[in-house]
Image 1 (spheres, rainbow, N blue to C red):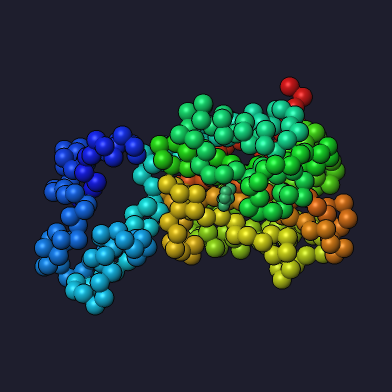
Image 2 (image 1 turned 135 degrees about the horizontal axis):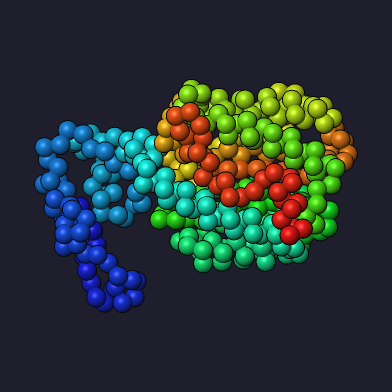
Length: 342
Ligand code: GLY
Ligand code: MN
Ligand code: MN
């Protein structure tokens, strides 16, 4: 293991280091060295190796990169990330415990946010960050989306500096991190606490599909995330037709422009490059997040224009049923409306 050596002067400025000795004593490295020696030591350590697994993204200037970047040098190199993705994609019980804690704390905080009347996106943003942290998370897992009205249709809206208006939706996509594992949750609720008829119809359509898709997160379904995306897309077409949309499989992407989900874990978008065609099996952790965002366009029913709804849960796949990690964030219309009454 190559690590930065202890250096009191540098540590005074940039924070404490474990150092070379701790790499052996605490982290159980067979041998540890100062990373500044890597360029000279690696050729000696690796002369007999036939194949080296390596990160391809290491920044130039890093001594280990200098060694691996040397053109045509033996031994052969192969990317490390496919191996790491495989190791990371299936979570151990200990990892799931951390993700469940992140989901439980964050879900409760989002439910508590629904109890209150909000006028500013930035106030709600501050509430979420603060409450995640003081309730036991390490901090927020990512910059949240806190969007009023039509801004909810902007998938990566994070400026969170506008005001909420009566009659609009609030959309929140937020989660905390616990023990370095994240949770990823989206909820949509009315600014004034009471769903209008159009908000209710659109919300129910998305929720019906979301529930069905969450239920498919079990090994016995023998489906991949891409398969569940297909089921979700067809479900949204059916549900939206029932409430008056002229929609079909070829134009649904104008309303539902993103994938139903992604892997989660140490990162929000965990295991990048790990295929969504893999059949889901016990220990895979994913999001299920159908969304419908209705543009201000004459082709869609007038009363739905400008509405955006996304409902996202973090889910761990089990043998015969999903283990929903974010169940404390309420999502039934009756439950959301009851929060404001109480
Ligand atoms: N929060 C990012 C996502 O839902 O993918
Ligand atoms: Mn997500
Ligand atoms: Mn999200």
